[in-house]
Image (cartoon, rainbow, N blue to C red):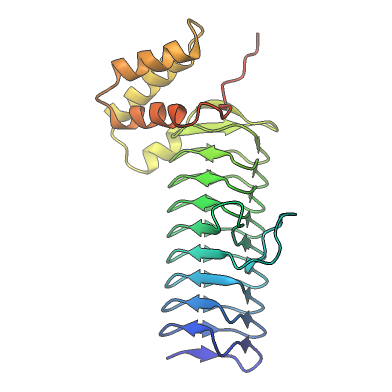
Amino acid sequence: MTAVHPTAIVHEAAKLGAGVEIGPYSIVGPDVVLGDGVRLLSHVCIEGVTEIGEACVVHPFARLGGDPQHLGHKGEKTRLIVGPRNMIREGVTFNTGTVAGRGVTTIGADGLFMSGSHVAHDCIVGNNTVFAQNATLGGHVVIGDFVFMGGLAAVHQFGRIGRYAFVGGLSAVTKDIIPYGSVWGVHAHLEGLNLVGLKRRGFARDTINDLRAAYRLLFADEGTLQERIDDVARVFAHVEQVMEIVDFIRADANRPLCLPRNDD
């Protein structure tokens, strides 16, 4: 049974699934679809062409489906798709896509988006991600599954962050981060692998050891980066997780890569 508080404003054209709860002073626009069991606690604004997956919980003052913050946007109907079972805390903002981009912003399933976090237009966010307070994505960013974004961290537009990566608090990420990597710094640099996250997620010891050996080879001082990539691909061709890093780097040679800091 759907429960709508009398102070909420829900457009008659909005589509509400079974068991939806819409709390006080919330606003739901005409092009919104709320999946089964979605809960809008209070003072939530869902607008635009927006689909919220089943069992998502949205806390007060979140605004989902707002227009992209892009000078080229002229009011076109672009979309936001949010997967199931996300916990969306106070003041979170997700924008729709742009005509010049993908036309849609996509959020995966089972994420935690802490207060004040922001996903900009045309982003792709994977499953099981955690965004700490005020973590921010610029437009067109791609975030892999199980990524952890620290508080006040920000990713520059068109950035890519591979699966299982960890981004430390206050990091300014202007370059791509390899899968399983761990970065820190006001201008983020690679500190190693996200070993804590890998252990928590149950990765086998042998896999972690292979990743560590591949990391040391990939970012050694000898040879060019391209030579080291080829060496890693040859030596660790049988290790799926290592090849994921290699494929990530090779996928877009025009993007700068977040590297370890050279203290020499």
